[in-house]
Image (cartoon, rainbow, N blue to C red; front, side, top):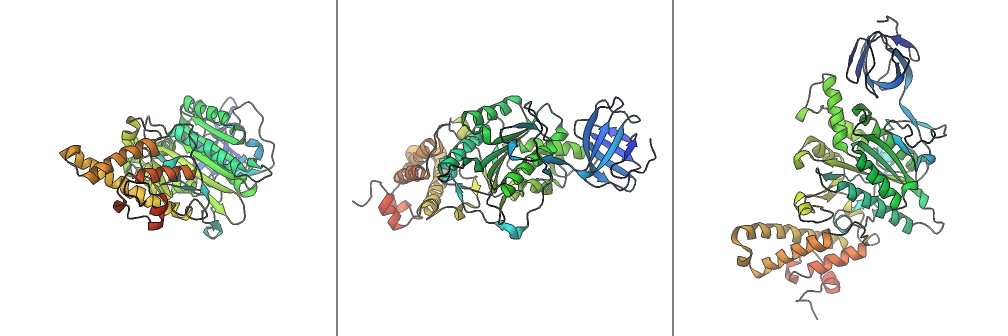
Length: 476
């Protein structure tokens, strides 16, 4: 092993130890955390890595493409003196890249002089604009009861085998159509862009999204970053950051409204746990590193609107809950950082309901600020509270009916059961191609509420009952 003292831009020959994608280099000083390195094996083949940890005389290097073919004595490590940067340009829309930003579609590298740090820059809280602009997804369970706002981070909590990919694609397709509909007369729909990042997903999932974007006509406004299941796991740690780096450029420097989809965050966290275990770090809950919360926050918080730009970043992370356990560290910590969650229910999925959005455990914390008069409709806030309360009460009635039998229930409780079935079949359930306006969503909700006695509707105003209630005991 070389005794060369390394300066940035210089090279050391030979390493101390190689374990999986982790390499220990001794004799290194003046090396920075997150610094990029070039690694060459005995045949001169080049691969890249970055510095994970720096000591007085040693540093830990993470190799992006894995360590296959590297030897302790024949490996040459060159420290480049800078963090990992990727080219960013509007021309990246319509292109497909790997997790490190290298083209996968056979096209050239983006022609640009603008290279951005994949770690991004923290947003000054005083520069943030509070999200208030409603995004119409065309999905009643979201628009009506878990409203998505521009600049919000709203994850989808799902499980193995559930249609979270179809739901995300539908949101993208219908939000894109909404952006085109709301465009100014100049027709500048190019101001809406989608950045899609896949981490450890199967080839058919990546192909599904590509087909969905093509069929919807949105492909020209989509940049895809793909780290597939057979790609190096260590690359998954960079993939979402590379995608968010492009999103920040498009939003804050080019003034676009950018929707970022990250799937599957559980695969990302598994890769982080794997690297942590190789490094010998003390594990925390379920073997994940103790810094999982701050690591996730470093990506989720790269979302929002700022005062110096017209653009915005809206983020929809998708994660599959192991064993459908919402208390698992990945969904648990994600729920703390983000502004709510869209939770998919296994029972609804088995009943043939699409999208199987479980209304009660789902939440949009910013919903109250993006709905109401001048945004959606004046009755929306109280309508939503009433619909939620009625469905929650129906769940209690359903539990009681499972014990004593439905025929033993009172007349009002039987109406609640009827309401609950209709709510799931007519409000939550809709086809993959059904794009509902907010007026249609509100109309369906009022029709369902009219199945209940007027005295049960205590959360809406008398004027709203007069205007929208069509039940048997309506005033004539």
